[in-house]
Image 1: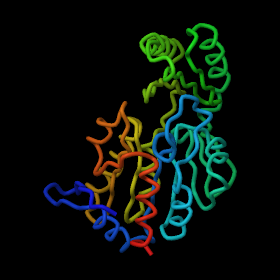
Image 2: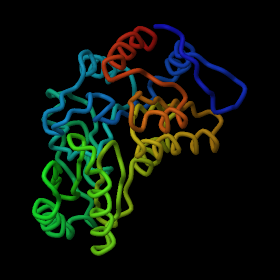
Image 3: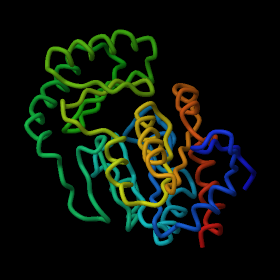
Length: 274
């Protein structure tokens, strides 16, 4: 594994990836590994239903899961989508829709109760988006949220975003911007940072791998835990991309070139943890 420069939580103390994994190995039984899905485990596709994990990623995660305390996927996707696209990966916790849904180690999917009354609103919003937004807009209905994509029609970005924000204001929804997408969500206090904050409360170390602006909240949760507990070791990893990559990289400790490179990175890390 080539050395990659890291920023420690204590400024002025540079690390490299090999050092970071060795530090993690000393507390592997208390370590949590978090991964976003789109753009991190899987390359982004014009059709969001067609994405598949990059080579080596799932095998590496399956090998790492018994070595660390927990592995969790924290995604904007519904839990059932994640389950279907992870190839039967076992022993992994799934947090879908920014934490509005979760499933632990293959168990049943649990939905945040406060979000359930918003399902009809989201269904109606998806129908309205399909009727009113211009051709080229991809409307993704996720039961508890609606994502408006313009990847295949970049010229529509401004129109779609303005429409989405107006609907959010009309309906009292929250908005999450992303990579050529605007997502409308119920006004329920759940996000990736909150998920990470809860899971790492009694952890000794954690890594978070993400590629989009919503992942910055997860990075912030690791930073806050490290600031409060000098014995906690956290590493924030950005996966490069041409849209939000620089903003996410600026908030991270290291950057990996792509989901495919992440598969290689995790595969090379395994011997350092076992």
